[in-house]
Amino acid sequence: MWHLKLFAVLMTCLLLLGQVDGSPIPAPSSAKRRLRRMTPFWRGVSLRPIGASCRDDSECIARLCRNRRCSLSVAQE
Image (tube, rainbow, N blue to C red; front, top):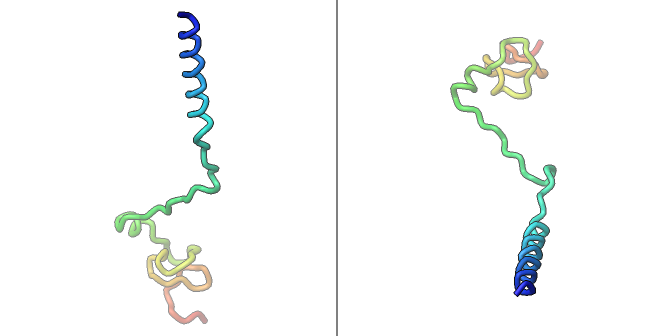
């Protein structure tokens, strides 16, 4: 009778070890990062003033980004 119990315990342990080993955890670098989207409210609040650094026109309050700075004039002099 104790042989049957020992066999059942060993089989359970083997099954659990197989489950742990079967599913690797993905590396953080391979996981795709989701870009954050801003709601219209936060987009309006976060607009940058004239003279602040910017990457494109959508970041500036005047909607003009020239030479990586928020600008008021279209033509840079």
